[in-house]
Amino acid sequence: MFNAEQLVRRIRQYGAINHVQCATSRRDLEYIKAVRLFSRVTRFKGTIRKRLPWTNFRDQYSAGNALYCYRCNSNSPGCGTPLNWLWYWGETCPEYDDKCVKIIERKGADTILTRECLSSVRGFRTDIPADKYEGCRPAAKDVRLGHYVNNSITQLDIHRDYYDEVTWCFCYFDHRCNGAAGLTISVSLLALIYFARGLI
Image (cartoon, rainbow, N blue to C red; front, side, top):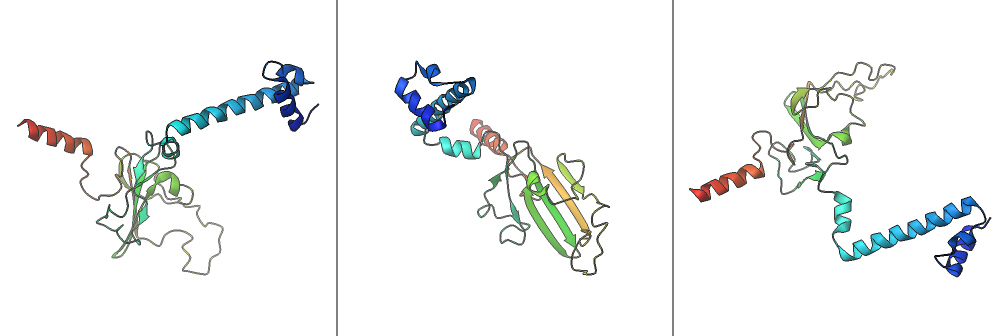
């Protein structure tokens, strides 16, 4: 049985037609086929990327299926109740079937807004409502959270009951839909109004 360097040397020596003669076993033959397939695929990808300079951008963001959401916290400037969209343009969500989320947490007169993708907060938030359809609903109560913890430090919010009211707002029908608190006008509606004005 040959090692990888000897197989590659033999392939180069005998050429593409006699690559079966280089192998001493079925395993070597499969290895040779895998090496050849990998070299063809990488060569093909290289030619595509040389011809199309935007291929890396398209592969990285995959804008066809991605949902754009605002991702910020109201402690950051410009992410409060009137969202400054000039500072936060929106980012693509990691999953293809993701939802935009706006979490409103109130304690007395203080309000904390968190705008994020659902897949990003799913790992550490246990109060996500079961109904994730479009609209706003109160947070779920996790009774098992911090059940076996003997906590004497009151500042640690182990049971996540610091806020008086927590509301989750979900949306996924339009890009950047977790920004505005009130009416959201879609781009297609604006285009329709513009063309209707032009016809009159």
